[in-house]
Length: 205
Image (cartoon, rainbow, N blue to C red; front, side):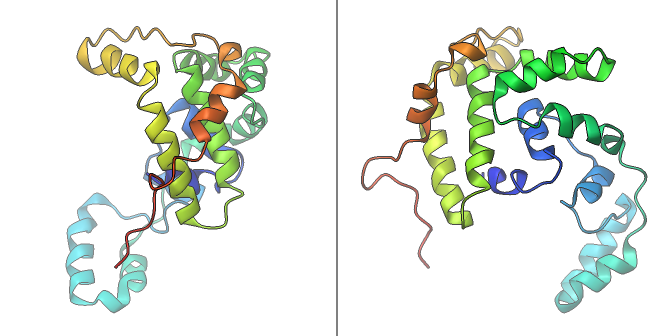
């Protein structure tokens, strides 16, 4: 929820890579990517919480005092590849770029993408492209609410739940099955404004 706002603002097309592949970042990678500000050893967390509770006006200072230098970010080794292969906002271009690379890394990421819902991947790319242009987090939330309300009613959501959670067969049959069969009209319908009175609005306090 709201992730598109943050992912779209990461450099080097990292947000697009994360959104499409579902890759997870560890602590060192979060610091390297600019998502995290401090890197604390796990054994320091309890002390950090206690000191912040006691001195809530010194959060930044407390974290700086307890933080350590993170180890090298593993993802940094592939930063140039990510920037190159995930450069386009067109899903077919990303797949083609990875197909042209005979490295083990490209083959692994291509196999990951091939297992994903083509519809979801195209929605994710458009979501990040549009989110980057929005002027406020509220506008982003409005867009994401539209997406969620439509995607929940599409076949791929139920199919993904079936294949991964219910049957645990990990053999989803996506509909549409191929990226080229996911039309612009379908994507447009997922992003279209909701009827009057159904749009997301910030909670008034």
